[in-house]
Image 1: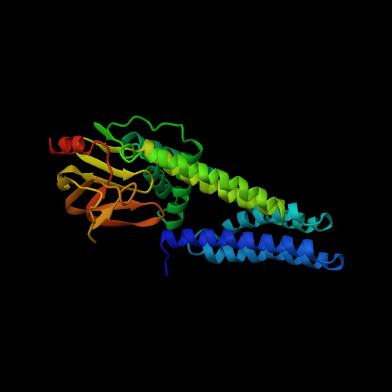
Image 2: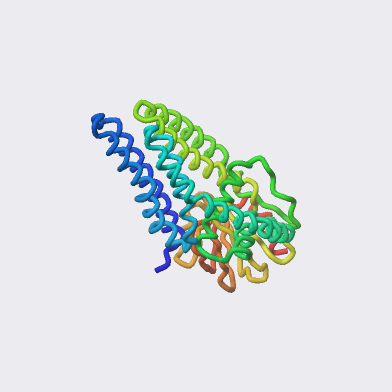
Length: 336
């Protein structure tokens, strides 16, 4: 049975929590074990890191995503690195021997990956020249070169989050759109984001200092995961600011940042109407509002349109309700 992107994403987080559990329990046992038993505990920890967790990753992530089996070598490498930093010095030679065995296959994997990047960049630039849409174009270019699989969709989504999270100041290329409409000003989303990111930063520092009392490594790993979550929030916000609704010559690109997008032929629009916050969409209506309870415009279509969603399967709908600044001006443009 093929899992949905959302279910696979949950599997990835569960696998990471499994790694954190193995790490935390291993550190506690090595710290609490009597000197006579420390070597045995360290050996068990090494087994869990280089055998147990890679096996768990294979069944939770590699197989559901239909990744190539040799990609598990990257996971083993990461586990070896962590184990090398934690285990006693006299046991590190086991890790070095394992690294020597997998070095050649890893080199082949690296060469294969680099050979694909050039083709992906060429496809991506061609798509961007037609319509700048980072998330969709990255997925399409990777799918063209490497195959349109669930794994490629999730990897493309993660890379897009990194692009907006790490390079949030980098503006999108100027598009050929006739009109651009933002979606965040009317509901003051920037102020809300400022509050959320401030709270996250305070909690991140406090939790890091708390964990330092018990384990430096555990504190480091939890901090890295927290930073990734913060990057996700920053990337989501940057995409919302930099990815407005676009009206082209005969199409309209509806979207809310990276969360969803729908490219619609203007001739397929049956009606557009203003709605209030109290509007309750029915089962045939897709709620694409930046905040679900703050929507102001409803699109109805003659034929169902396809809606691409981050980490989830595309869906079709005959109605989309969302938030758009200057909604009345957009309605006049479409009707004109």
